[in-house]
Length: 163
Image 1 (cartoon, rainbow, N blue to C red):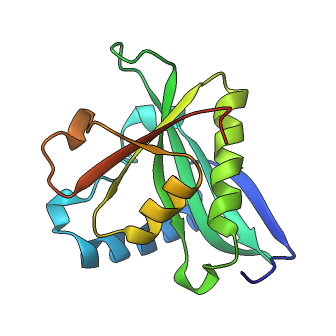
Image 2: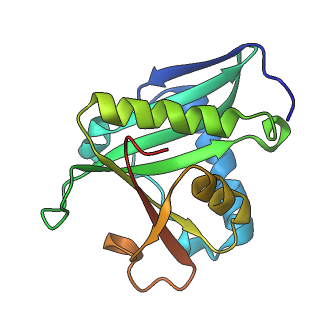
């Protein structure tokens, strides 16, 4: 792992141009891995997007990663949960620990907001994402919500406060 000297995280609005540019890069990557209809993005036209928390990671002032947390308001959940969405680190900035630090940063934001669980969806064609989540204590869970029935989807969850 290459040491990172000047890494910072900034909570941003959904309209932030750095966030949008990184999400565009993420979408390009996902379109290479999946059929287009299987990409689960964020509808930035939906007014509920304002309930999300978005972060941009900056390395030496350059935007290199992003992620979001969406409150899950499923009444069937036993815990107050958020969903990790649009998590991405630019390929030129990988293997530096940025994804780990950003994941831990977002977990801290979820705890501070009173949430006790994070859930996420990733896919079989994303082994690097799966490895990151498993390394940080995320466990496989049943497919939920819009992911039910998607043969490429894998869902994971983590009770916050665990390491």
